[in-house]
Image (cartoon, rainbow, N blue to C red):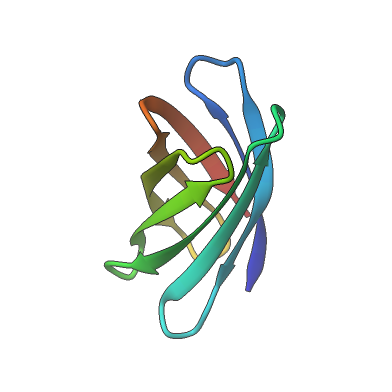
Length: 91
């Protein structure tokens, strides 16, 4: 299942959009592009039925991790890109 993802840095100066694709085995991929042209790709896994975590790397060399809570078709999460925090929703 592929769902749209939107989010923003907690500083409010950069937003991003992309997609998350989840697979039946509980793993998935994440692709994001920011309003500043930063592109990030990564992977995630469900740790429990509703909670997941992942990591990603961006084209500018920054990397980060994220955690999320999902209902299956909708969810929210938080993470870090380098030293900056971000929030996101999907579905």
